[in-house]
Length: 143
Image (tube, rainbow, N blue to C red; front, side, top):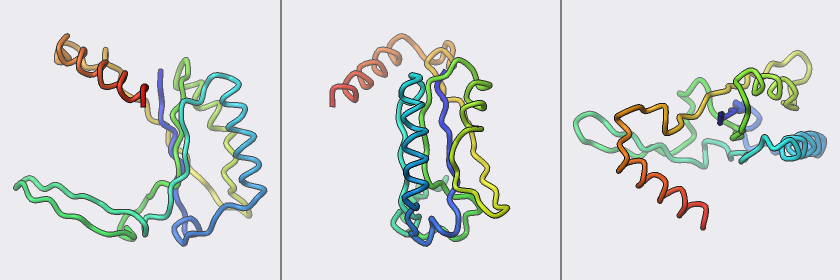
């Protein structure tokens, strides 16, 4: 199963404070373990929401673009991984080892979310749709 592991943002990351060398070294070593174990498919850090845009689609067909920062959001994302694991429990065990940089009594709550696979959609995912999806994945891989 594939899962997305989400690292939440905090006031420092939203202020554009870059991680210390210590955290970068810890994260690099952890990512190396993930790769060697065949777990990590992707992983990236994200810039502060002040550098982002939010595209809002409303039910009346209107689309609005909002510039960051997204201060009204309670939880923002600082980074993510895509992991290939045997179970959600395996993902939890790996997530327990993530070097979060939480210090001095602070907390970091990682979120683990299973990614939909084709078989999860049942009969609604027709052979034609499956074929189109597979062709798109092949194109992405080729890039």
